[in-house]
Structure formats: C-alpha cells, structure tokens
Image (tube, rainbow, N blue to C red; front, top):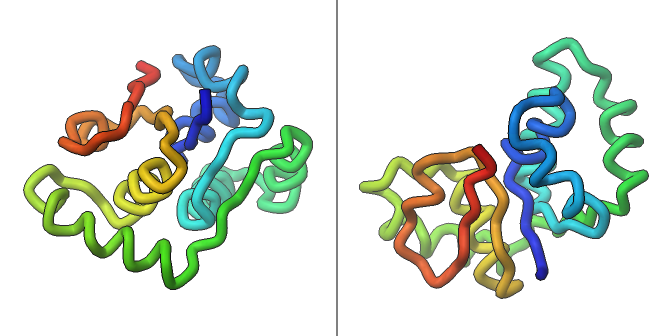
Length: 126
C-alpha cells in the first residue's frame, strides 16, 4: 500500500503519541508533501526540538519528500472549492492533492481531512 503521511501522523511518531504504532510501519518509504514536511519541522522546533536532528531522524527512514511545485500548487488550489466548507487547511489540501496524484492512502489525526469527499482513502490513526 502506498502511503502519504500528513504532518500530524509524523508528529505522532516524533512526540510518541497515541497512534504512532499505526504510522511507524509506513514511515520507511512513506511519502510526504514538502508543505507537510515543513510543518513537521516547524512544529518540532515549536515544541523545543532541533530542526536538524528531526530532519536527520526522518531521513533515516528514507521518507520521500515530494516538492511542492507548480503542478502540486494547481492540484491543491483546485481542492479549495471542495474543502472550504469542511475546514480543510492549505496543508490538508496539499496532502490530499499528493495522495490523489499518487493513488495513495493518507495517514492522519486530522478530523476534517478524514471527512473529505474525495476518491482517496484516509485513515485516522486515533
């Protein structure tokens, strides 16, 4: 199964939170948008972590960071009309757009994303 990780799923591992056991098997070779990756690094620093150590930890898993380029920007923008009434953030839409383009399943803790009416499987880890 191809898996796209939302920032919240990766943070569950980094912060040893409930649901991390669902994410850990998919961290190696998992896919994450550069938008969500940036969010993970920022949240890590916000919580007192070191950005470089967090980056090194994630690189050890061979986590695939997909650039947020003009094509991804277009796909993400197109999801705005679908997600605006569901409380989807920009980062949520970037994650959903990536999963749609990869025909992948999303792992997240995000309630609104799990309710998105799109042809993508979203697994809420807790």
